[in-house]
Image (cartoon, rainbow, N blue to C red; front, side, top):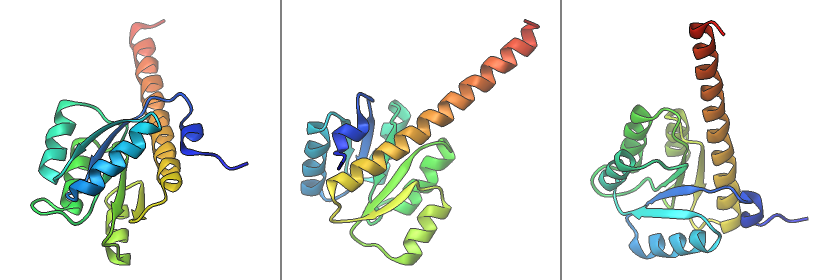
Length: 153
């Protein structure tokens, strides 16, 4: 049985930040993800992405590499410095082995090339969202354990 992106995401609420300087692509991808039930915020630069992350939380960030101003690699570095647990997927039309390795070493969850199959992107988003949920659950359990130890219960 083939799973569609909507089926993969199930009832999970998923907040996505799309970062790409190609406005037509950004609008089209935003619409395709929103139709499938995701909440999407889209911005056209690394600077705007950093500002958005300061204002709100995202489950997954989909980031282009080649942008004017702060490029995708620099944006990735800043995002990971601010939130090491941020789930970031690189989606670029200018892929190279070198840029892919560099992005993964800096903490990108995955590296996809344009044009991307929407099913592949949704599956990658689902995996990233699940990973983030596990990290948050583990942190919550650690906090609860610390509270119990400190309170002596």
